[in-house]
Amino acid sequence: MFGSPLLRQAACSNLSHSSKLSPTPPAHSLSHSTCSSSSYLARSLSSIPSLNHSVTHISSHRRRVAACCSPTPSAATPGPVPPPLGSVSVILLAGGVGKRMGASIPKQYIPLLGQPIAAYSLETFGNMPQVGEIVIVCDPSWRDIFLAVIPRLPTSLVITWALPGSERQDSVFNGLQAARPDASIVAVHDSARPLITAADAERCFADGYGIGAAVLGVPVKPTIKVVNGDLMVTQTLQRSKLWEVQTPQCIIPSLLRKGFELVRREGLEVTDDVSIIEALGLPVKLTQGSYTNIKVTTPDDLAIAEKFLEARKEPARVL
Image (cartoon, rainbow, N blue to C red; front, side):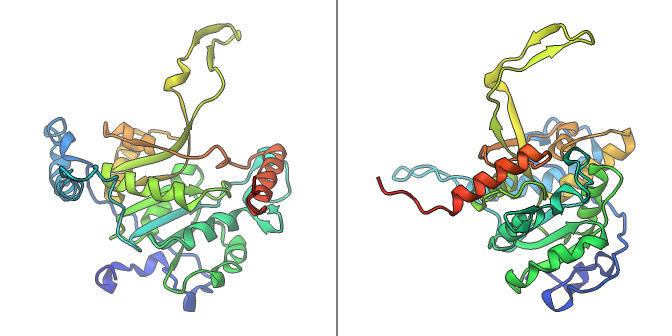
């Protein structure tokens, strides 16, 4: 569907359902490619030679998207153009150890209403028509968790394995190296967020495809204060401008690769993926998500996730 079979690197260990039982973790190449995000940024980034070709490529993509979205006198302006069906690669992060949970196994593998936490998001993304590949970043000893779910997913879905790194950004990098090179976007998701909905993910896919980078999030509810080392308040932040970011975080692959070049060159440490794009000085869209898309990191979170899932299973009440 997406070009020559040569685009599938053997080192990435891409698996169809007929070959998903390969026990050997892949060895990934560390090649890089360059890209930028939008024609809007071409003027401000024209002084950076390494980005010029990439900006031209993305500008062409944005012009095609803009042409599709041009308003007509008789119709309202349509929303963001979604990526082509089967063109999204999801990087599912499942390599964390979950120290705050205090459990004997990593938090993403703890049972949640009879199924491991990580299995929920795998099923959600695997059944979305936009998703053609899921790169599962996990220790090989936990692959059986995912292999139990794969038979319930479409046979056209490609499953790829990658090894976790010492830090989150290292795991994302490994997943990016394993992903198909012709993906329209990569959607990075924490497997400890089992309550992601397809509707929220679809909107984030579209925003990432159109802008270059997008992240799911919700407005912050409590008041946030900044304190000093003595716990004395130094500033109260304006709540209306604060958002709590979630996952997925959806980015054009070549743009994320360019961001990782900067991270490695400057020795930066980032805790979320779109921060890499922000470091390039490029735009990031905030896609409004749902408060139920929590990350399960403590026993209290686990209890809350159970209640949310139970509520979803209850039939709608007729008033």
